[in-house]
Amino acid sequence: MTAEPSRQSAHRIVVGVDGSASSKQALAWAVGQSRLTGAVVEAVTAWEFPTAYGYPVPVLDVNFSELATKTVTDAIAEISVGADARPIRYRVVEGNAAQALVDASAGADLVVVGSRGHGGFIGALLGSTGQHLVQNARCPVVVIRDSVAR
Image 1: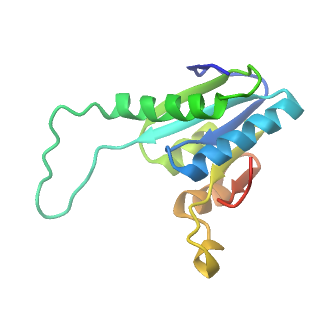
Image 2: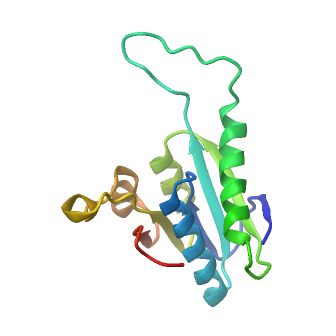
């Protein structure tokens, strides 16, 4: 698999990638689904400037866009190990992750995200991004739990 900047495609599976184990599991699941459907996988990573309330937080010489790009390309490289050569496109967006994924869901066949469940009852709850997607996405949403094997 290769990582490449995103272009629109007729059939897309959008995946939210934040570098967490659950988002990598979601990416792996989406790649498997793309083999079945022929859809292109588009990994979306969003970033925002850190905010602080009260005291200002100095942010010196940090390129958040570059960090986000590294996060998504590293996740793609990790998922691509030992797999057949299917390209995974990516997009890095400045803004709220949930809204970026809702926007990316327009025209997509499916949106896939990981769940950062904490086990037990709490683990049964959706995270805020997953909850926002389930309520607002413009296509079906799949939430991959941490316990799902690749």
